[in-house]
Image: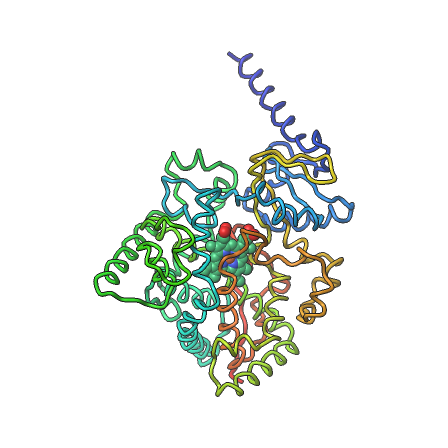
Length: 497
Ligand code: HEM
């Protein structure tokens, strides 16, 4: 018996050693893995952000002039390109080899069937159906819902000012985008901005600050194991709450023939097959109720944290760069003055400096710092001998690219001038990827930008922000999360201008 155990143990150790030489055997540079954990011990144990691992690995690989390299999660190989030509091939030209994100999704878990997690034909079908939901015409239609939420946002800041308290800007921005997404995706009037115990805010926090154990399982165990053992992407109580709420909303709208200007309405048209100009014509099959629920949930998780993180980092940078904040305020006021003081869709599109500030924020702090891909068809990397086998995970190191001095000199400096049309044209393709690229690019880009623009306009036109001493400077990065975030609260002092 003892002999059997010893032999099995040795066989296991040799097997792991063999697996951790996978990239070396394929002629790809690999960072020396730690036995068992591979290259991500601290990250898998929740002691450091996985995004920092990729950013630093990119910097080291670039310094060694490696076009690409390999790392390991335990003994699972992950391919990482640094060369922008390879990045472009993976994301656009050879997309048919890399069309999945490799996220957990299983038919037994309805809420895991949202667009970000789907692959293959189910992804293509839903993507084609949803695309017309995000045109600029549809964004204009929802614009007023966003502007209506700025009242609550301003009141909340005034509340802190009147009490001489600093503002936790991260929490404030999250409440603002939660209210918007819940309103547009679920068709529910939500008020996280004035309700400290708001249900959606509570669950949004929970979804985006998962436990280390949840993240470990999510990142390392494949869907075909997780689905059958009853793993759920959304906490069961949230799943039930959302399902009940959405079904009530759908029933109420159908019964009373209510058409609201939101995503829910557009998705219900896809369910009924109702022809609304550009919707429902391209793909003949109608969406099922479960598919609609999953997509609304998907918009919630993909849409609120990414946008609120962008608002948070933008305000943090503006607080640290008062000259940029003043210039931005001047432009916002100037455009609004030409528009009778009103925030309209057209006015927001005229604020060029605002877009430069947002672009620079997304460069320095991309909410999705690595773009995940999984190889769906074995692929030989052009002009190299390296072969990526079907099923291999790939990570595009966006944050590393965005902080690369070859493309962005003095990358730590916050400088919106990098995003003048002239300066943008000087940089190579794929050197700016906050929304991804290719057929899987963020479908909600316009909506996300619209939320960030409206939030920043309403705040900067009314308030001046400075850094409060409670905020750690430089900031620390959150250790366990789905999106790039600050570890702890971000405190700013606000005053009326
Ligand atoms: C500043 C805000 C946002 C940022 C930075 C952002 C970023 C991203 C990124 C990087 C991806 C992956 C792209 C790729 O793999 O190439 C993505 C996908 C996605 N985003 Fe966004 N996003 C934002 C806002 C939104 C909003 C507001 C929504 C919905 C209302 C949304 C819905 C989605 C969906 C559904 C996908 C999956 C697309 C697919 O797999 O086909 N996003 N986003």
